[in-house]
Image 1: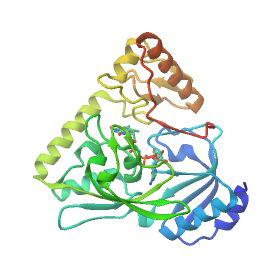
Image 2: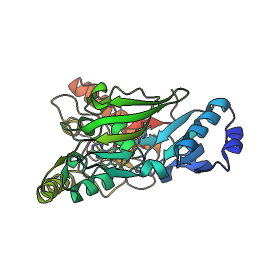
Image 3: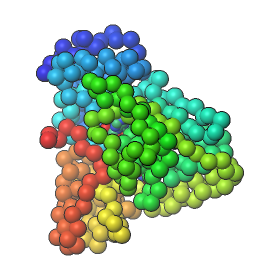
Length: 304
Ligand SMILES: Cc1cc2nc3c(=O)[nH]c(=O)nc-3n(C[C@H](O)[C@H](O)[C@H](O)COP(=O)(O)OP(=O)(O)OC[C@H]3O[C@@H](n4cnc5c(N)ncnc54)[C@H](O)[C@@H]3O)c2cc1C
């Protein structure tokens, strides 16, 4: 594989910013992570297609990044190409029937706010969640009981090497932080069904949800949100806390004293520090409760 050849071939591509050795700590909410050997911000479909074609020819691995708000990147970084969807992929518009069509690179908070301004309900469970629409759909972001996938009327993906494909929302299985979408497909755009409602009622609902977040979550320190998925009928935070690990530190990382399912970067944390705490929490909960916790955070650059 030749990252250098790919870099040379992609430099100067219209509608793309192409960088070598881009520090991913700048591109994750954890503020942790080594460099991506290659980084491409694709502003149009043509630029994305060209990028994938060159990467395939040069045998360079790739990953799509949203805002990196659910991502832990290893300290040594990623030896492939991190691709961000921007420009044309960050647009959104509302139709007469109240549906919202948006590109995968659109910021979720912008969509939530614009839906509120239009008096359209449906995105309230996403208030306060950082990231892009693509990241939210890939993760099926939301709360424990409500998630964004339930709102999808249809979505357009790119199957590298094959082309675009449209799914009806009902063709995809959406669940708590899971979807049946193949992991090698790139989400390009989605149409979400929203319903008219009084803006005051939507705003009040959102404010209540934000207040609950502010009361329970450590929003002042860099993190990736919840580290583990909640097992059915149980709270990961309570399980970890019952093992005495609330406030546990390793280097600059700490299991938050406010919410034990958050591991925060107190300053200078490395990915290795976070991994150590993830392992400690996982082992303790398995030993004391027999529960095998599953990570919600995605790992990049740690090998297979
Ligand atoms: C303070 C805080 C609070 C949070 N609260 C919540 C919460 O309440 N509920 C919740 O669900 N999450 C929460 N999160 C986690 C995170 O914000 C969500 O998972 C978010 O949807 C991730 O979006 P992103 O754009 O940052 O994706 P990234 O973190 O960049 O990527 C996440 C995954 O999505 C994939 N991906 C991104 N874009 C695409 C695309 N276009 N096509 C295919 N795959 C793609 C990536 O490859 C990666 O596997 C929180 C995070 C933080 C920091």
